[in-house]
Image 1 (cartoon, one colour):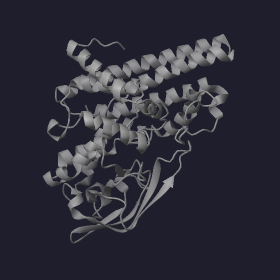
Image 2 (cartoon, rainbow, N blue to C red; image 1 turned 180 degrees about the vertical axis):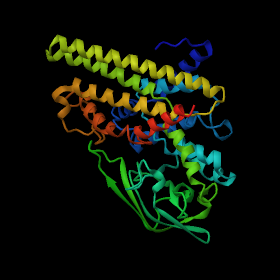
Image 3 (cartoon, rainbow, N blue to C red; image 1 turned 45 degrees about the vertical axis):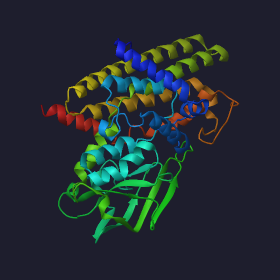
Length: 398
């Protein structure tokens, strides 16, 4: 989709491009290009975050008084588009995009002073303790318990699918502080340092061979009560606020960058393989259909940006975007495997520090890893079935 940019927006876009040309090293570009998961491993993602922090661009969505940029919604969209087009490493959102908005909205001034600067600079790296073995989409049924003991809470239980817990030095966590009544009424939101006595982190290796996920066990873990965000038992309200930020954001810039890669991979594959011309034409048509679908999503996201600029509430837009964006992402990975053909069967996980030229096309190696990783895209951040129910409930209530 072609945009008509104002002179100021064109100047901003060119400023971002100039910055990326100077600061985004070949090594970081390779890490971004080879990132088949949701975001890059800590080494590269945090290195890139610190570079952005030096420029003042690590947390552009934050309020200006806490280090944000004050950009317009279109500037945010252009920034995301240029990062994706340049293969910048996708950064972990747990600190900047998830817990930080909660701290800004619900935290005390002392909590803001204690935690926001480290998130902004990249000194601190956070993980999210939400899901449990029996509490995924039904998050309100969580059972990880925290009991108040003087100036501390004592935590017992477990969290699962805890992304990058092996790198994190801080965690935000939903815990049960009261039993009885509606399950949503007994949940609290705690922030604390990790590792700590009584915490065990066990890796979960995904079907793609990546170590992004973990299970975290709490055995009489004592954390300071000053890490409570908001009031005790107010955690469900805070959790819903956080999930709006996790599900929100723009999908189209990343999808368009990935589509460009697929189109180039298809041209190369069909030019050298001698595969049937009809097959090439069919793939070109399917890629064109994806281009149209991304255009439609982009139009929806730009409409949401205009509503955001007018100060309208998020409503169901994050749920709509999550469903559309995650399912388009999955469809792109399916096409990637088809284009790769037999090369997609190679077992070369891209997070194993592979350097230089690969023995087979890099895009083919990426395709299978991305396909396997993105099977979870319609599940994480609230399954798409749940998101459809949210959208339906809103529309039917009108």
